[in-house]
Image 1 (cartoon, helix red, strand yellow):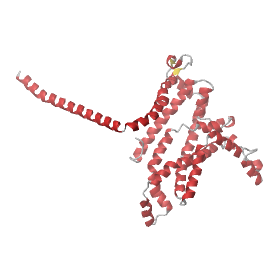
Image 2 (cartoon, one colour):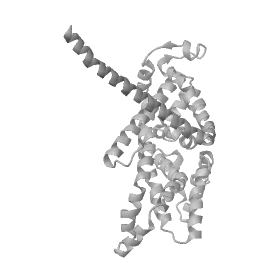
Image 3 (spheres, one colour):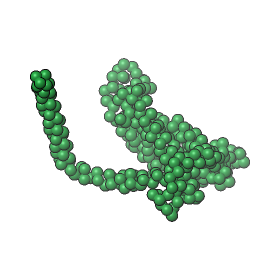
Length: 336
């Protein structure tokens, strides 16, 4: 009886201490909630202005996500999404066994790799060159000139390329005739050998200029005293670029690289659709165009959804892997 009384006496302080800790945690939680509400009340107009953007994402990006279920169903347009029969991963097995999908995946990987190797570094090099222009008016003229192609649609650019590269009436034909080689002009837009090069070159021409916006904005924030100190130490232009400008751009480059890797399988629906033709399908058919045909020409919505889900999953995995790699190389880089 005495031992039981002693045990009760030892437990009671522990229970009291646990209650005090719980009350302190609850009070702390209430305090944090009040501070958060105070901050939101203080910045209420900022949150109000963010509502249209949030509504857009909720309605057009998160709302339709229930449609992902189509990828796992034998979708019947008359039964609808919820009444169609579940078939598990059968759509994915069918998709990966289709020769057209395999060809589109192979072309997408090749074109996306070319874009990562050649299109992604182009704005970096262009921004370094523009930054070295000392005449302010000429610099603004160059910046405006390289920005403009971004605002031209791929349909218009397709027409421009045809007017330049046509082997019968194009500008390239006329120039070649001046030099006596009018019969040697190849039809690049119908050439399996050169079509991917044409895609990459046109991407650089259209997007490299607009891609310099972020890089030039970052270069402006680099402390000019660093350049002055480097000049005093005898560093030439290349040394200044290598040791000051490029390190200053490192974080921006890493973040944009993560974004580009995340959209690795988005090789450019609008561009390819505007430029390709049946002669070059073998080298130009990408996942986006194949998915478009599955959905809108063959009405295979379940297979098209499975293809889109596959693309999104690969993109998410690549973003996470690139982010982890960037954090390992430089802990200040990366998105999260």
